[in-house]
Image 1 (cartoon, rainbow, N blue to C red):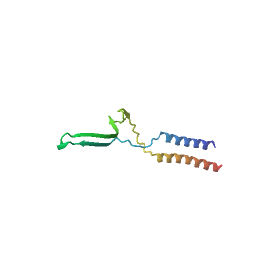
Image 2 (cartoon, rainbow, N blue to C red):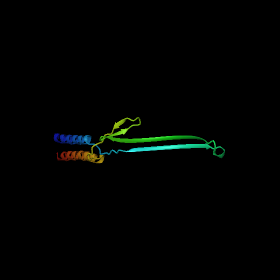
Image 3 (cartoon, rainbow, N blue to C red):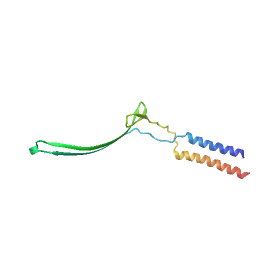
Image 4 (tube, rainbow, N blue to C red):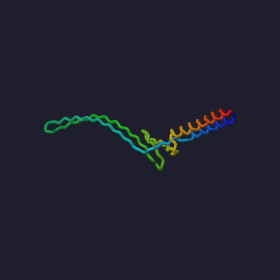
Length: 122
């Protein structure tokens, strides 16, 4: 009975360690996005024969900008106040979340099946 407990503990521990050290695959893109909206209203009055033109304008303008920059091989995100924040680029470990969950589930299921098989023998 002690052997199966040790085996179960070892398999569970290995599954936990495997899942804790793996990094999920993701991608980082270097891009710049801008959006600008303007509304302008111009009123002009013209005197006789096109003399004494008087114009007034009213307007609103809103804008958004997001950009990432790469400097000497290091990628940075530029904040609104102009400060740079370094972007972490994860290494491609070729493990997706679904694959990692499948590995952990297989290890735990195998430990359970082994425990039941040994339990039935006795």
